[in-house]
Length: 317
Image (cartoon, rainbow, N blue to C red):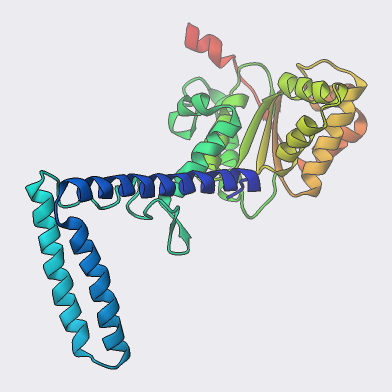
């Protein structure tokens, strides 16, 4: 699981709050029973007294005390149940009502993360990715080949297979993908397919349009927002996968070229995967961002060229 320490601690805090609420609710219920079920508090006191006295006997080696204690506690338990019933309360009224009975709202079943904890992590990762709603529509389950024909279809099928392999080997191999090609050939859709599968397997994914990424960067740099810039860098450099969509649509200047190269370099040094979509070809990338940036992409990215007619136009017509 690739959450930051802050995110992990935030989830643990949620579980702590659940446990505090459980204890508070139980204390209120017990007080209600003491006030309305005459004799219940006395039975509780008898239970404590019995446990103390029988413990002394067990320490002294009196094995019969164990059987006697069990029988006495069962008798008191039946009397308590009758008192609750007499006052119109269910037998489990004083039992904790856990949101997740499997881990009793601790987040862990023994030393293993509970399924509810893992689901909370995934929900947080979806929220972080910025594309939760899109991924519900665009994923491998909804993928279709109906808009491709001939060589374009063969090429698209091969690209889909590469995308599936990217997901399957994600934990063992650091790979980067560059989707290039004309408008509407499925580049962003395939990114979303990958993102959906990785988030569902508890990997952190962040999506940025190229415009949003460099606008956010420049705003934090020129406003000298050190805290915001640190947080952004922390996300960009440490999350499992960063997706930059529509590279080349942002304003072209030396700031963008410099930070784009730094981003690619740092992700590669940390062994983190990156996916980029663009309508630019490699020559245009070299002209726009510099030869060293293009060289970095050629050396470390699988370049996937998608071809065909604009799918969005097909869908509308």
